[in-house]
Length: 358
Image (tube, rainbow, N blue to C red; front, side):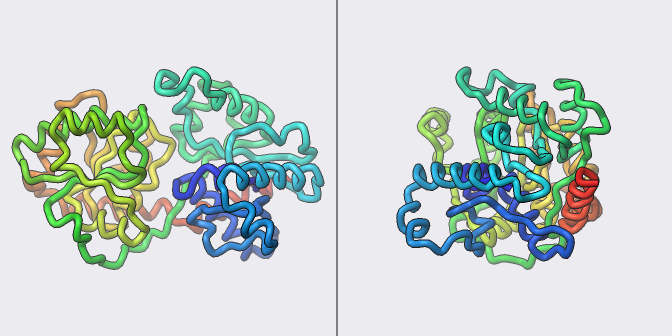
């Protein structure tokens, strides 16, 4: 595996996926796995040590240098071609001119291709992704929905794609104490808020909910609000009802456990780790009615039209006002979780590797 996602993310679903794979293969009897990294600040590799040199520990503390030297180290390792299979951790095709071994590519979603209007015109991401998809010996899609999009957009033959769902620890989480910042009833929003995540429409719906429930809060985790988000919140007089928290994993479990509900208004996703996290924490889950979310959450979630502020508002109010079906939804969420154990995901990925190398 290369450096890409571990330089891009400190936290996040993609780096978490590859870190899980790395740790699983480290204890495997049939495969030896290496990640071409000198240094990383990625949370999921915090207990892994890649280099003990003084250069790595002191000279690569600056992010820009870290990315530069990790990239060069990945190239050096790839050029040696002293391995059987390469699994790049993202879509940059920098390795194509150096690689003489087969490679498998995981495609997480087709959001850039389906919603290009939400991305910068100078962004080469879609081009890079197309190039790596075209050259890959085999593709792992993380949902049937993503596989369908791959076939429709790039005409990838069915036999070149294997669906392997992400997996998590599906055991019910230990009860956590409520965070001091969240002493009022709240709705929970997790993670990124960029264009296709539909965050501003969600805020417009939330604004209507607090007309009826003025003490209700919205707790957002992840990065701090940018200037556009901050101005929108101020203009709409939402400042007193919104809390931003950079949560640790334990704090995130607490946030799920004490929330009225978790909401994801996204227009499209490839999978949805937070859905499964919500299920493990007995959190009622409200989702956009999209093919991927239906595939992952099944009957364990409540759905709304992400293009309709009215639909989002009514869905949230129905839960905030007292949802009689709470126990049944929690039960259905736990049933759905049984499809996504981490061990199953790891074994199925290993089987893809073995089939490529036959």
